Image (cartoon, rainbow, N blue to C red):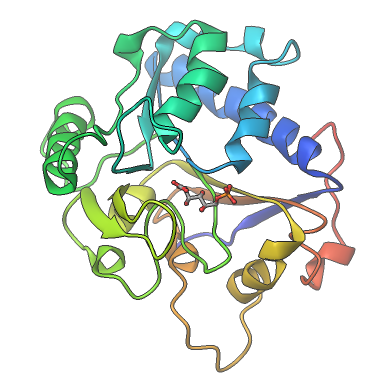
Length: 259
Ligand code: 6PG
């Protein structure tokens, strides 16, 4: 039985970013103390840019032994790494370069390959690094996710076969907009992470946030982000007031900057 999601609501998106940075440092520090390393899967899209800026800023960058962090990706568009739409390219510019992360610490999805080949190669790499002992699912220390207005997360889009995948760790998918061909971690991987954190900001996401966190009776839609319920791990939603504006709970709980 998965635990209830932990909700943290901040007045503005820059505070969500700082809250996420503080959380990253906390989870990473704990993982490094316990096992000498941190395995994290990054999210794509635009929301993480503010988070990366906070994490690489003076308040947080010095608080983690970055050489002990291995970076993975929740998903990738089927584009080369230097393409404007590449999630790896965004992370390289906004996180890896500012922190001096060595290339050998980063495990990117090779978007330049055929999607099915890229998915297969990435799964082989994940199994080589994370799957020692023949695990059916790997256990990442931290997975960062965003959410689209349609309720997609990573590259798991509503009513697509990728959402139904029960055994593969990495699969291909098709986006209804933008770069169509995608490669994505599957729900099994997301739901076996120790900590899963959604970063969602903006009024345009509020209705979907409500549908996921306070579903209306009779709402039979299957929103992929609602299927992210870690089996044993923590699930956290970090929202700004705008994204939380349709939640009843929003008016009762506010996270302060310090949390
Ligand atoms: C991607 C992401 C995707 C993203 C959402 C939200 O590759 O685009 O993995 O799931 O998190 O689409 O994107 P924004 O942060 O740009 O709103």
